[in-house]
Image (tube, rainbow, N blue to C red; front, top):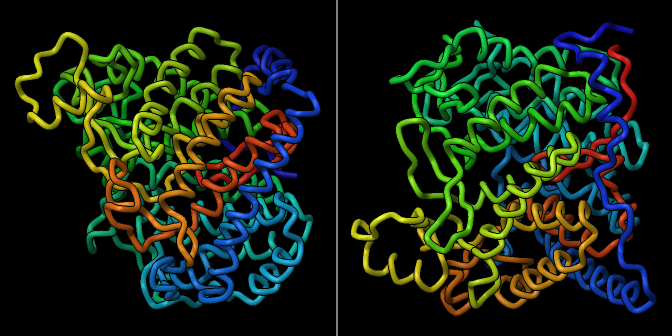
Length: 509
């Protein structure tokens, strides 16, 4: 057994957290409610099976299927992103034959070979390694753990840099790294700080600390090489710029926010602390520092008096947001429950109301990719006439009106359902599911829509990423299963929706 590498918790803190359960102590349990839930769960299961059958028929083993043309698509190195990302959802839904068939396909994958394109290390971790770990957690089949370890060992090579901060892209066949934009050493916050959960659990399961060490090294460098200073890109403690240089370890640019490029960095601070049995105190300290600054600088009441998240720091806030930020109410609620913090839970709820409104106010019941808002008391003269009109109608304006079946708002509503036991949140998710079926369902699965104001009539997008199977369907389904299925008291969900078992951890691997 190897000792914990990193920062351990103060022992006096641990007991307080261990006593605190995340999920509600009770849920509505009448016969009619049980029947309603069962019917809704089966409806979602049928939707998943519809999409899976099309994938199996036309693109089995490929990364994705284009749901409009029925063509197999390679987007994640040809290892079968949808295949692996779907494993735990197949298992949880009880699709046993489909799971067994998928497992046989996974067993034959050779991660030393790919489609010839560099691998995006972050995506490889959350979709492939995370999917394989959770498949092992649920099924007990060590083949999945063997494959997860094999791929993680390959991806560890991307961490072999001067600082230990990983390359954004890694060519598994030539052993060379790069940035998504070319040979530069640029990376972003989310893509250096979203390994900690998967790598910690993998170290636990393999009793090898090498994965955990690599992931935690990122924090070492970020904290050592960057000091918050007014007038610089990193101006506020805990509000990290989006872009950094992996060679120097220093932040470069990008206003702090919790949208795409940053989101899961913050998510993994609190979730890895929880998964570590509350032992990784540094993770908690970083989370608390960030949360303090988020509350002060990134939250803003809109003209509709709802609470929104923007982009900015101590020099001001840009009142723009995207659907990725809609994960935050759920993660914030989880953190609040873990720390028994009712004030933060109320903030999370207020953020949830604005996130849900971006869906519920649309005639399609599905929300846009990005939206803007008008801070309360601000002058609307800088807005376009169409933007001002939409703010008056919806409370926000649509900046990017398309929908790609993203799960973040659904995820946060799911957390509130499990945390409170209030059935209204399950009803909200059911309403969104009805909108998805009406506007996105096609012969090849579920397509994106070009404009959530128009739905299907405004045109469809031939895109169905693997997260539709790993996250969107899973969170919708879990809102209608027994609350003990993947209980938040027993599992921590990754940013890709993969459940990892919470176990006792004594500080050694």
